[in-house]
Image 1 (spheres, one colour):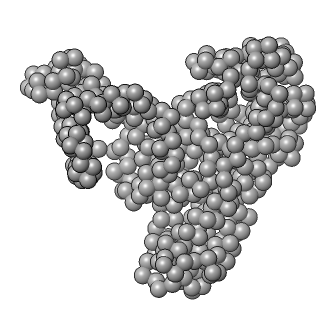
Image 2 (cartoon, rainbow, N blue to C red):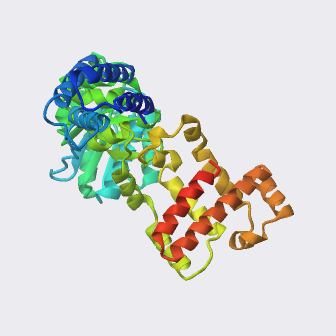
Image 3 (cartoon, rainbow, N blue to C red):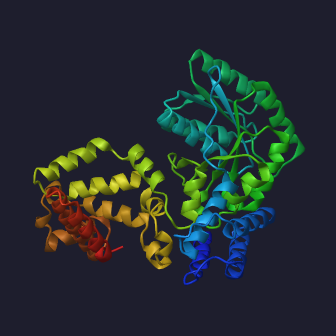
Length: 451
């Protein structure tokens, strides 16, 4: 996410190393490079101009601590201004209303609006313990209605049927009436998208908004459209009283122009960010955490929250007890760890949140992918139950059979065996309770681990 901007800013800010202090002369070139990095990231020009002016003012003012090096001081200033541009803190959903609270979703076609409706429903259900209903008022695309029905059924959300012969206002009102009878907490209304903004679309969504009076009106926009995302959000805001923005497809956006432009241009907060195709790939938008990610400082808070939400605590405790009793770490345990990693969005999603990943060469990052994770699970699935329990049995012909069973090469099987040995060594150190030893072991294993 935002890799290009992260890499460019990282190189630029490193150039201040060796300077005694920040002066107008030595930050001039840095500011020029930061400006170019932001423009290449497709950040809107008014945002870039204001951003650079503020950085210059802060860097040459009294805000820089004497204990920091010029490079550290500049990173601190840039981070603070990024947070300021994107909003000081996350602004959650305001759902205080007589149930059901109504959320209206707006946006252009192709922005991922219908998927976001389902993701938001799942998020409200999983983290806020809300009973959620969804309905599609998109009378132009029968496929959108069917898509939402499928997603709702998969996620155990209440789905209210609709068809293309009905009026959007009637569809929404019928769903709200039905939700009241079922004592639902929230109803999310999906609306029709168009390929571009037109008068007919705006008139229709204005009428719908007036009829249902939602507590939240969220604009869903594709982050890969860069500063155009901010311009489209502004056009919608002039027609509708938007309460916030949902930025989608951020996992595929290497630039970050939309994230840095929207708040400044529209005055509306980004409330959520979509980070993948899976229905759990929706996060609250925390400006401070996103600024840290852009500057290559990682986002450990989001990673910890994700682990707490998605990791199976019972299975983790069961493994810990097993190791503490002196039992060995087998392939069943390794498979469980790999599956847990998959559930958390895969390796890429986790690495994105780790500090210092901007310093890792791109060719190394490319080798760490979720296809490798799936291959490793396939190798373990090809083993017999006995082989998974007693890894030392796997030699010679057994390796060949395992490789043939999962359609992999012999070297792939050897790689998984080697990885298991490394993990088993680490687990032994964990059993001894020597955390320092375990951390040293993890470091050396990471250096030798086949990516």
